[in-house]
Every structure is written in C-alpha cells, then in structure tokens.
Length: 409
Image 1 (cartoon, rainbow, N blue to C red):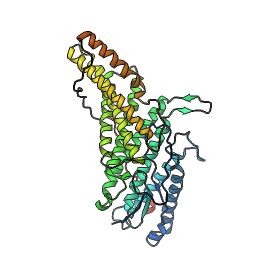
Image 2: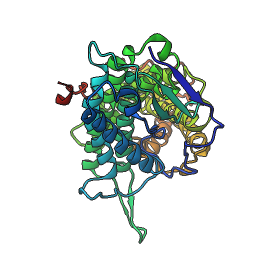
Image 3: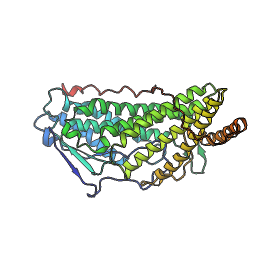
Image 4: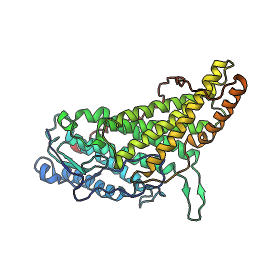
C-alpha cells in the first residue's frame, strides 16, 4: 500500500528559504523540490530497460532544474532566457509535462507497480523537511502541485513593475494582466485536478500523512487564491474601463470576497504560524480583508444612488465599513511583510486597491459630511449592510491528466 517516512525540520538542510522576497504580487509558498530516486533498484527486473531509463532521465532532469529554480523562484526578477529561447520556469514546466504521461504508467489500471518506488520531496510549508512515500499517486500529486506553483511564480513576475538599472520603472501593462489571468486559471486547473482526481486515489492512511503543502484544505486554498487574484485583475481592468458599470465592479468585488473567504477557511484548518505556512495564511487574510473593503465600497456607492434617507444611511454605513477594512488591511499587510521570509516594507498598493486606497477615504469623508448636512447626523455606527451574494463566474482551466505514454503499450 505504500510507506511513509519524514525528516524532521531540524535535520541537515535541503530546504532553502530566502531571507527577503522583495515585493509580492502573487504569493508563492516556495517550491517543493524532488530528490533523486533509483528506478533501476525497484523496477529494473519488472520493466524493459529502455522504459526505466526514460523514467529515470525525465525525473533526473526535473530534480536538477527544480533545485536550480527553487532558491530564486520567489524573487522578483527579469525573466532569464534559456538556450531554447524560453524562460527557465517554462522549461521546468515543460519537463514536468513530459514526465507525467510516462509516470502515469505506474498507476494505470491493474498496475502492480504503484507502490514499488519510494518518492522523496522536500517540503516548504510543513514542519517536516521532506516526505517519502512509496506510492506513485503521491508523485503525481507532487508534480501537479509544482506545476501550479510555477504558474503562480510566473504570474507574480508579470505583475511586478519592471525597474531598470537607471531607476526607471515600467508599470504593469494591460497585456501582462490578461496573461496573468490565463496563467492563474491554469494554476487553478492543476490544483483542481490534484484535489478532485488525484488526492482521492491515495489510500486513507497515506492521505493523513501527507505534508501540509499537499493537504486537501491547502490545495483548495491555493485554488481559490488563484481565482481570487484573477478576479482582482478583472476588477482592476474594469476600474480603468469607462464601459464597466458600478454593478459590474460590485459583482467582481463580491465574487472576490467569496474566493478569499473559501481560501481562508481552507488554510486555517492547519496550525501554520511561521515560515512559508504562516506567511501564506497572512497573505490570504490580507487579501480577504482588502476584498471586503472593495466590496463594501462599491456596494455603498450603489446604495447612495437611492433617493431615500434610509438608502443614504446604508450607503454611508457601507462606506465606513469599507474604510475600516481598508485600515485593517494595512495592518495585516505590515505583519505579512515583517514575517520571515520578509517582503518589501510598505509596498505601493497594487491591483484594484491601487485605486481604492485613495477613493475610499475621500468618498467616506464626502458622504459623511453630506449626510450630516442633510439629516443632522455625523458618524453612523450601525450593522453593516449585507453584501449581495453572487456565484463566482470565473472557473479554473479544465485540466485533465494526460494520456498514457505509448511506450507503456
């Protein structure tokens, strides 16, 4: 059925964590890196030599590339071109896609090889430094998780302003935002496949021993993070479009709240208080609070279009709630940036919040003053009006595991 062993967090280090992440647009909780496996020892007398050699070569390539990529993947940087003309992230992703169809031969229906090879991966969020499991579905799950993290890293790179050696800064383009949405939905598709179609294949005794990086709640949290950040980009583009109505902006903001709420529910099931895990939890809390600020702001502006005293009171109340959430988001942002590995202190607002950081305080002050002039009231401290409930329209890419490599035939 498979066996498990883990190395405690204070063991001699394979796990590398940067001291500083720089600016963060999309949080990436590090890369889980595979360690060498001797396929010949367990499969040499069970499979043709050519097939074992191919499995070994494909995985060794990933081991080498992931080890090179892991220390720098969370750092803001220019894309590094490879000898093939692509980026190192793209090459690693391609290597993983090449490996999967061959790997799946170990888990095909009727296979007696599923639990013959012990796979080893270095964790990032779990307390245990590495996890070994003699189950090929664990390897498939780890590969999909790594593919998703590479996509998050690529989106993060696209969404950070480019700073040149002379100090000149190139802002994020509309094209980069659109490309980032596609990449984030791709990551969500990998994670959806991992939690829906791969995780259930692991026996219950192994599922409970998975590292927290691969736990069901964390996978779902990462999936909803990818969707939430995609909607945030849609909202940012809607704010810059004269054709986007207030109703559209409110709907996007409310959908974003739903995504971050599910993301926070997923990850807070686990006792992550420090390192990548603790920082990951804080990032999701920060973005959840920001989303609430945006949703209450647009809800308040729409309520203010009413012509009754009640609608105006509700509008002011919603805007005041938005301002409170905005203040809270700044506090959570500070804690997030200070937690090791530290990130850029006091970074400029990004995404939809770049606009709302100025608009919310300004509009709250204006509406409260107007309310006082009309109705003789100053600050309205009532229960916040309920946000509209919208289904999340954006969906992850429909990713499915590839067909079995022909070499298994």
